[in-house]
Image 1 (spheres, rainbow, N blue to C red):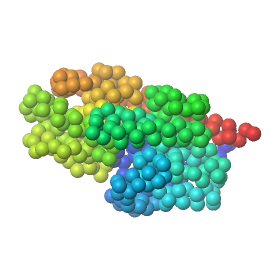
Image 2: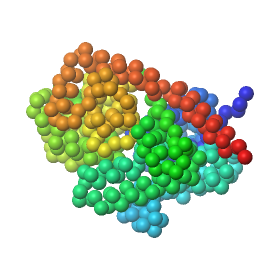
Image 3: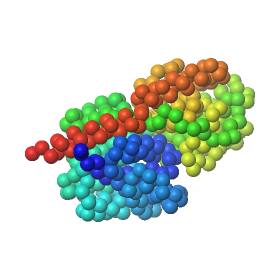
Image 4: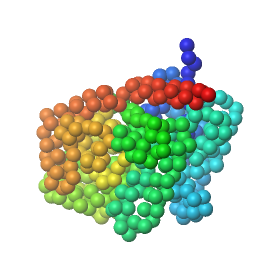
Length: 400
């Protein structure tokens, strides 16, 4: 019988508390692999806003966690570091000696079968893996350069800087793929984009994002509004800020006019908006479940997207219907009108919300969405696919 595969997982942020898509993706991946028998060690910067004792308690249920101090740094500091290091800003801001030193220490005193970097920005913290001759794998949650090219399209006043960052990221992604043993994309679209960048396209693999099909209903009491519309996202991720600002300024006024009792509940995202009776600001929740009231509708108005929107998967799991821009739903291969509703402008958002006012439509959509989760995103199924891929990567490295 084969001994459990030992994986050293290096991330840019801890998966607990699970308050955004990247953390939730990592959290459910670790749970699935642990339940499948993998031996997991995690290194990540500690979240300064989380209770460290509670976070460690939760993480120990699935892995051996090493949460290291994250040094404080300003945006100007990131730019200076990027300038001197020749790296993209978004890579430089996640280069932490505390993380890379912890990775080096673990690799020097223990034997791991594989090192997994979670996101492109974590790769540089795994440098000792190659010295230790351990296979190094990247899971790319997004095609980073595509996101920055998209931001440049909608931010003309910052276009030169955004394009420079996008170009640097594209070059960085290509070089990273070349020196890694494998890169895992979470969508077919992202896998195709990464293969176009790679000199060795056979190093690119696609494994879907894991997510359970059923989770308890979210926050109580129910959010007020008829309809109660939720806009939720990590404000640190620029596409979230762009989409929220666009939706509130360009789309919401028409929705509020059509639905006099509608209320937009904004969680986490922090656009500049004026006071309004129909828009309620909420602080970033301590757990994402708070944002998914059972009587609400999740709106995902991303104009720039790559990878998979985990917030959509969570809404499905908690029985909340979703209305999304096509860009936001692109990686899911879900069907408009079957698992979710798609909208591009104010009229289409109004039509979608009108249809969801019918209990039968809402129930049918939610039932189909959960069936889609079971068929395509089962954590147990995804864990088996990852373990099979890891076995092939390890075996290939061992062949002389």
